Image 1 (tube, helix red, strand yellow):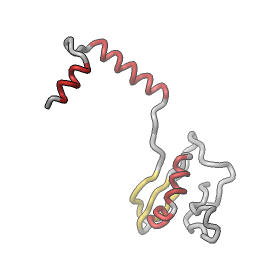
Image 2: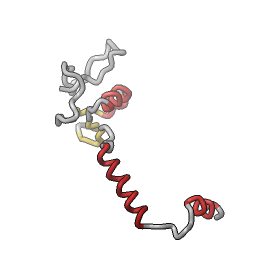
Image 3: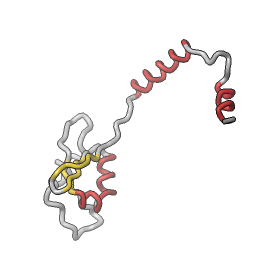
Image 4: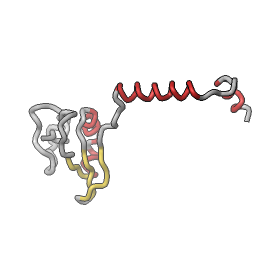
Length: 115
């Protein structure tokens, strides 16, 4: 279950009708598929800092306008250490099979700055 959007800084603010009660087990686990919480445009605008904090913890939100989905607010997918290592290995293999014909990177950069 998702936590309500309203912030604890606003004790008089009632939670929005379409948001589930607070979760007792913290933010959603990365390996568990969870359904995104639907949030209206006005609520998203009003509570954006709180939403971004929760997105940073792995939650996802669907922003709706008049009940219709218009955007998704979700964490940016990063690269795993294995993916980064594979990319670096591909770059090294490319470098081993391609040359600059005797030119240095610095010389090419300086040549490009002339124009």
